[in-house]
Length: 219
Ligand code: NI
Image (cartoon, rainbow, N blue to C red; front, side):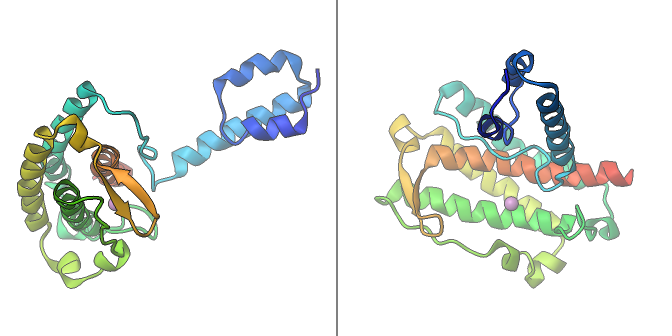
């Protein structure tokens, strides 16, 4: 049976192994289209250095995940320190990908970004649906402190921040996890649980940038 073009378009943008159930029903040309797309998608994903661990995925609240992530959250500063500890200043000034931030900028960005997010958590816990303040992360990543202050200061800052943040998170009740703030740029309400999901991912995401660079350069 010929698979209509409209139907092909629906499942081609997100390749799914379930596609195999269609293979017997479709003609040879469609099989070629599907395989070509599958390998292109795979190749593009491998090449997308901006998202080495993929994008974050929201998931419903559950205790086991929460505790597992709390462990990751507490370990983020140590993991970051370990990955950069043998890099010299020349290496720290190397972009993690062409046109991307340098390792130095990535490290300071983690401190900038996580400080802001910690404030979002505190506001949300102490106010009713606060409107948070967004900021331009690219501009923040080009100020003097980011370009010239040694990264050890941001790593130390992250040690202190994540200790307080993880202590705070481990004390939250189920209701508190569902408290929300309003994001003025995206114009949506975001729960603390969803923001936590994003930030657990965010730390690992940037550490993976640095790991990739070290691997690619053979440092
Ligand atoms: Ni980031």
